[in-house]
Length: 139
Length: 100
Image (cartoon, rainbow over all chains, first blue to last red; front, side):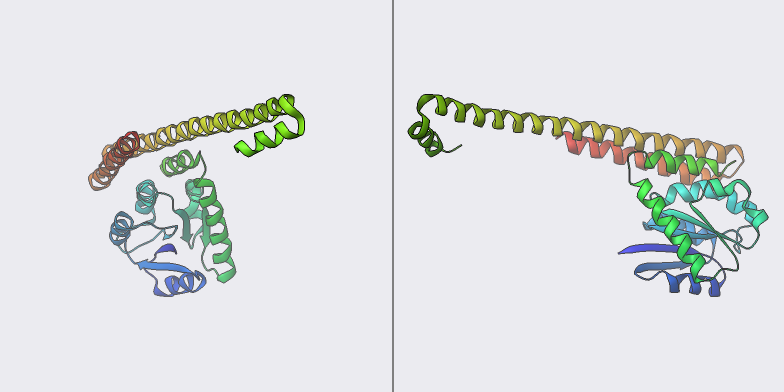
């Protein structure tokens, strides 16, 4: 069974993302600290990450993104944010961007992009792409 | 190839057909042997390439750790350094297991 990690402090958002992820084992966490712990302890296929968390500002989350990506291994990364201006160069580092407010169609689209990324990551150059994207998060 | 196939060839066409059937059987065996060797060679190269990619990933982890160290994010630097060393160990262990 595929698994998904949803990192967001807003219960409503985690609930709406969870609803769309049919057939996935879902884990929801609400802080950066819990996200790091979850990524260290479990493997996921897709990670939904909110930029602003109670223990992390958008800037801090950008800073942590290379680490989160490397900890997540093969997982595809979907960035969730309410402000397009926040995204900046981070779009190069993630597999998909979900702009808030979003509806189920947007989540499905993001999920499809994430699944496409997972297919790419399983090929011979997958590891190189993943590490390049992790390093791009510093840009 | 079954001995009966050679006997049937002998009955139908004598020595020329026996040689032909035997040559075909040898050719088939030799080709399958070469294919098997090529497959093994290819699989080994693929494993080496995969290990090399994974090792590059460890290098990226180390670089990320260094960047965190430079920006005074000690916790993240430690997490990345741990991750890099664990992955190096995992690659080496996998290699040792494969070579045994």
